[in-house]
Length: 209
Ligand SMILES: [Zn+2]
Image (cartoon, rainbow, N blue to C red; front, side, top):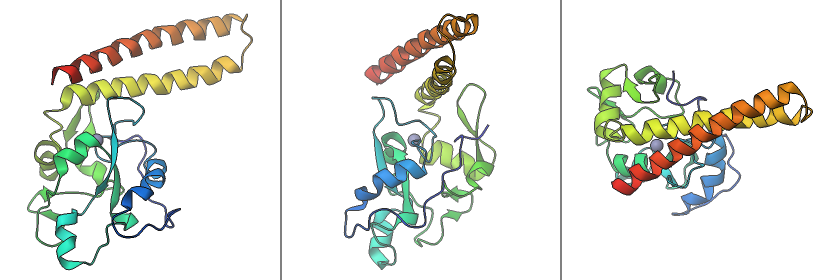
């Protein structure tokens, strides 16, 4: 499985044209273009435990020196959960903003198809690597290994959220007295209980760290 269900695609023409340090004006566009998921770890932004931010793929500290990239340049922005953003910080493998990978260290833009050539999602929702660069991203840059319990719980929750959304669509198509409706509802109730249990587990996890 890929880390993200859908490869994010940045729009060509953003809705707003912020200048200076007002890059957060791009956040609604980024949320849409990244399908409400973190570009790096694929977590969904619908839970109260995760706050989403606008990350600069090429770190600000680096391009501030040369002034080639601007703060609000849309193709350098990533919709990222605060955990990925806080771990990534100003990490970069070179002193050159055009060199994002050097000796198996560095970053692949989350909108690049190659992102999924380096990392993958395990059957239990964890994130593992396929390459040495993927290992660097997972262990050094984003600390997916340290964050493994929350990444898995967020994935379990998201799977159930998507299932429940589909169940609701199916239920709305049917007569409430039909056997089919009752069967779907029963299944949805089972998934809702699982959702609640995972949510509680996640909350306990965040309260413990
Ligand atoms: Zn993330």
